Image (tube, rainbow, N blue to C red; front, side):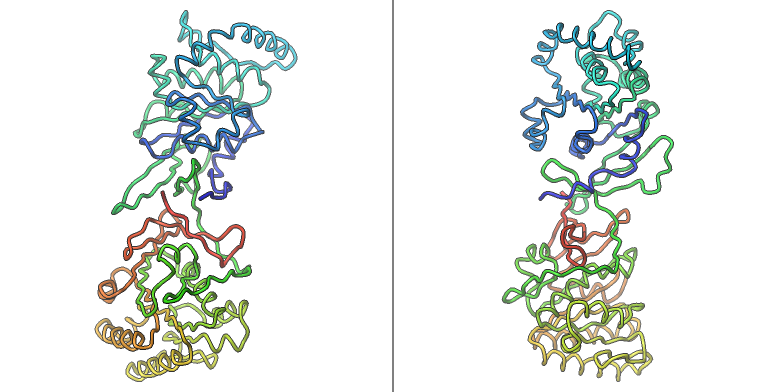
Length: 493
């Protein structure tokens, strides 16, 4: 799956690398964390804006193109240097080219007064020759005063080959190249712990991957940005097709777009999110109990990112929604949202709101049960649910069991749960039960549910994942092309 490249690099880094003066950066992490992918993506972002150089000490060019196929189409725009015997042999043959570059440099220096210092290079290497570094120096110098962006992958590989300590190599490049030519240098490093090089460079970025019950989770951590106040230092991300996609916190505005209907398949009811339906083989089976456990850190207003698509998709196709809302959710807000996609008659026919948070009904399909005797409230709820289900061929109950547990008490609400489920299954009605960790009823619902998903936040990003069935982490995002409430799920891989 290809993802939008607007979510590929934290703005902090783009801002830093867009400044007039040169900057240096280390991207570090264990193998497979996505370091090379991230470094190459930064190169891609500056395509056409900088002279780009990639020095790879890890793999040959064919392997590089195999791992990052998109790189092939940019081979004329990125100077790719592969550190190998063949590369070294070719470097030694280009004395004439170097002379021409030197002549060109003399002219450019006379006019522009820009150069790449070799002071530290000469002091460290003395009589030795380093073709890789010499080529980088010359490549940068010949493009002055235009800025260059260089990726060295990896720092340890170059250090080992040249037999120069990493911190010495970084200091030399910082003084010779970054500070005299205003070029930007990115090092890819296998080190995880803090190192001496961290104190030399302008930015240190860690890339981390961890597993939770075989689910992988990835994140970028901005450990250091010299001169910058980092308000958001952690960015969850995923990898796909040689690219990196950063997940972001979703801001849900009230600018609703047209909704693309997801048809109900025979024997299933749709979640309103196509990727979730596909993951389940067509949706949730008719008559099932779906438990969505919502972590306490998930803001209650963010639940609409999965609730609204389901409600809209069902009502637009003549399916009923039986809604027991959470505290703080206004009936009028739901009504105003749904009426953007349906008329008044359909709204009253296909939507019912059983509200335990207020004692005043605002509409004929708004049933207020707050402050009522519990037995009377239960009878009204059950009667309204049965009548609503008889009028609609498919109904979906969206029930917040935290409010029911508060209203009826933990023990009573368990009996109500089993009574309601028995009645609904007899008429092929469906229940989506929302619970929170720590609720007494949550454990019971987990045992009897046909499906169980968890909605959680990690570093300010909302994720959903399946326990029944087992799934990866999925970030919930607004479809870039269609806009909210069209939702897409992006797996963490």
